[in-house]
Image 1 (cartoon, rainbow, N blue to C red):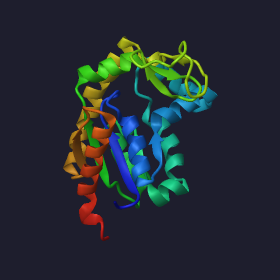
Image 2: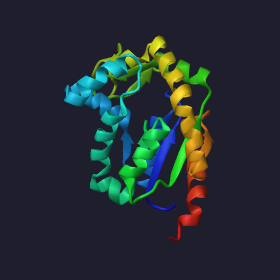
Image 3: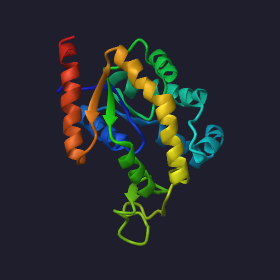
Amino acid sequence: MVPGARLIVLGKQGAGKGTQCVRLSRHYVIPHISTGDMLRAAVKQQTDLGREATRYMDAGELVPDELLLSMLDRRLAQDDTRGRGFCLDGFPRTAAQAEALDGLLAPFELDVVINLEVPTKLVLGRLASRRVCVDCGANYSTFAPPKVDWICDICGGEVVQRPDDTEAAITRRLDLYEKETAPLISWYSRSNRLIGVDGEGSPDEVTDRLIRAIDEQRRPRAGE
């Protein structure tokens, strides 16, 4: 295994990007950077960015690029990402964002961009059943709830359905993905940085596929 990496995991919401980014960050010893988690923290803390982002997130809309890039620029400038790399979850969503990200990363470059492939019908069911702890962000579902009355097993916080996990908001997000984000796959493919990985199966099975695909993609650079 080559330590450190600069990775992006793309795919529809509900495809398991967050779970797999966490697993990859542990494997390669790199930070997991989730723009969604960063935005939700800003909303909870009622920062200026959080208040502006709330109206977009609650409606299932994409947060404007300028807000995301400002937030991400500060995070990517920190020593851990500059020195070790990162697994980026939730960004970019468009070719314009990808170009802007390349600018933020310079003089560094991405190692691999992963497209986690999961059918839309499956992700719709996952998101509609998802429940989240309002305090620590732990994920549950209607099929795997907390042990006691929707109280988080980890911290004791309330477990709720996120406002943007209603069926209408989910459908809107998936429509936006098909319209605005799917072309990003073609953009990265043209730069030979994209690999597609089957996202169906157990988390362990998917992680094993990802690691094999990433290491294969990076092998020619191992001696550099």
